[in-house]
Length: 239
Length: 379
Ligand SMILES: Nc1ncnc2c1ncn2[C@@H]1O[C@H](COP(=O)(O)OP(=O)(O)OP(=O)(O)O)[C@@H](O)[C@H]1O
Ligand SMILES: [Mg+2]
Image (cartoon, rainbow over all chains, first blue to last red):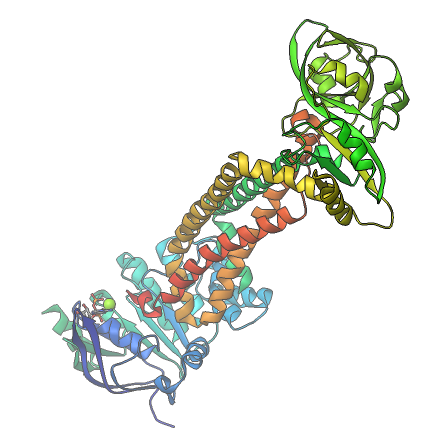
């Protein structure tokens, strides 16, 4: 058993562009701990989304290996990888991607339903999480009846409802104003973080950098900074 | 996951109704047109089917159907009677004539002259009057649809007088007969009477109606009659078929109805296909998210199949109900549709076509959902 929740070894990623391949990630080696809120920051196009997709098991790397809680995820068959994601990974997207014709509680219950849990029980568990996220009173509303911040909280509930050990978020606050963005991140930290769970958040929203335990900075497909001193990081970013 | 799929679909009211309407409309169009088509074709054979007692029709070799006739000399009757295996043979005359109605209008009619003594050739069922009344002088029977064509509702039909070729004809009964393809008023009378009604030519025997002996099949007897008399002989079944084939070969009906059925399929594919693609496109991000979260491709396919299956089921049911209502209502309410019915094969054919429409659009939808890269959800 390795000490790390996630180990990335020598990961590289090429994308085909015309007849050529362009390398957008170069020899990435990084470990992520459980119990920490890890930020992945960097300029647009630096490869943050590509890296987090590879870590989350939805994008095959061109080279290298990824272990998530001691499972070599890209050694799994396609189907095993899907089942692995369902059991172990919670996703939070910038666009929420809620199903518009399901209520908040039903949306929150999706991973449990996908795993075969009975509908009533799953929706009940969805409700419990909405309560933790302070939107119990919105449980029976449809996404279009909710504010952006509320929708993102429903999405967080959906990411947590099946108690996955890894949570990945790509720009979770990008579509929100500063205040609701911060409130969502506060809640995420409060509800998602635990001893045995890793949380990785991609963002270039420096307003919330102070909430991170560790910040990884990327530049041109490489990790160029890795630090736990928030003050320095925030200063660097401000420069 | 299937209730999620169904809720995704039914929650989007406008598209759901559009999809169901598309399938229902296609179903209605296809079913209704096929039914009318089949029934119109059948009308090519009703004149033959109506004569239940005969099982072989003998005619001049040039005659093609019950309506396309080259008459024979009356001597043909005795020649046919002399063939062994013939239980009975009776003359039948079918001819066109014009009548003057009580109001003085002129109307084209089909005159059918049946054997004077046996009356073989009149329809089985009578709405009014008794078959024996045909023995009365100048007696004719009129078909029910024709009676409504010639007489206003409430007018007395029985006992009314018509004028045929300067001869008097008195209506003594109303028979239940299905209109033939030409949908003319039909008058039944005795053969000897009919000769007076239709303008005189030398040969005025249209058919010899034959019943075979119990120990000889109609096919065998037909062959024997042709061999011994040189006349054309067809079993009831063959001659019914001849009438239908004649319509198929000589009218634009099959092509026209074929085009409408194809249009029904195209409309179905267009409405259902487009709406379903729109629906999938609206939800492609959600499908992508489901795939990322951990829904297998197999489950995704089942979801899309459940969605299209539901649309097919409701739409088909609705369309079939409307078509049945249309045909049923038409058959009950309008003489143009008298005797129309929906053969069992038609709903099955329609179901197969609807299934093809749904399979095609479902297949395209599934392909686009499966092609969606789960990694695209972070874009
Ligand atoms: N599917 C793809 N095909 C080709 N090139 C791609 C593809 N996905 C990403 N890239 C390229 O890879 C590089 C890294 O993209 P990535 O989305 O990981 O950046 P990012 O750091 O998330 O940027 P942003 O902050 O704008 O989201 C970019 O140059 C991008 O153009
Ligand atoms: Mg990105």
